[in-house]
Amino acid sequence: MPIDAARAVAAEPRSAEIRWDHKDVQLYHLGIGAGVPAADPDELRYTLESRLQVLPSFATVAGSGMGMMGGLAAPGIDVDLASVLHGGQTVRLHRPIPVSGRAATAARVAAVYDKGKAAVIVLRSEAADDDGPLWTCDSQIFVRGEGGFGGERGPSQRAEPPAREPDRIEERRIREDQALLYRLSGDWNPLHADPEFAKRAGFDRPILHGLCTYGMTLKAVVDTLLDGDVTRVRSYATRFAGVVYPGETLRIRMWREDGSVRAAVAAADRDDAPVLADTVVEHS
Image (cartoon, rainbow, N blue to C red; front, top):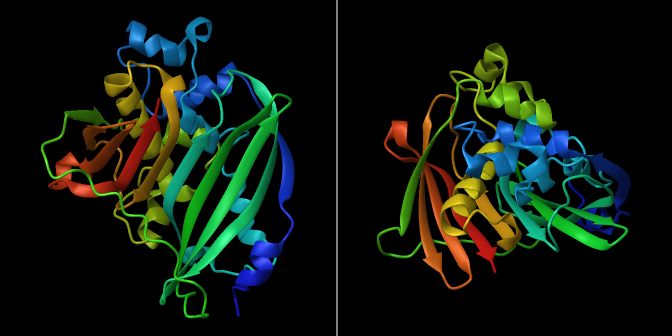
């Protein structure tokens, strides 16, 4: 079988050391749309080294990107990358991410679920420095055509927004060059830059990285409902529900709850086609 779930979960974690500094953080922030307007004091906390704070979603690219995807090469995993989709993402913060740092990471397959016609592989990456744990990232990887191996179906992780009007609605314009800038943080998939590759993948043109939309959404929540304070974020989870293209506008609906913000993100230019669903930011 292409997937041996027991062998994959039992495999030893892959260890690595990562480093980052203020330039990596600033580049990431620019890649998710920070710095507009450039002289806005609220934006300078994402772009100016003397005022810099680190948005927690930076954990998904720290150390030059998609290291957790190496889990797809783990023992027991043998899949066609053309059948792979990034289904969801969770970041749990153990403490605020420093502006510059060095950390040891351990990546492993935390679970493999059998969805019938597909499999879901949960890749977990944990980072710690000399002062202790920093973050835990879980990437839910959806693999078409690899289900039916008799494994557990796994939990249902739906987080529908409340049945009331949102407390806040924000719109965020995606620049035409947004994907070109975001990919410099480490995700070099040509799907986000090469029109011919995008067409072969079934898209009219290159699409924006899901994790770019993920970062843009968290920034909107922090800036509007969390007083611009990134240190209040405890965890952030979402499910990737659809694509968005550079040049479009994200419509981000937010609902306050006790200790959390729920969000739903849609493409405003395409009749509010879903982009992110089951989105929850837990905070202090």
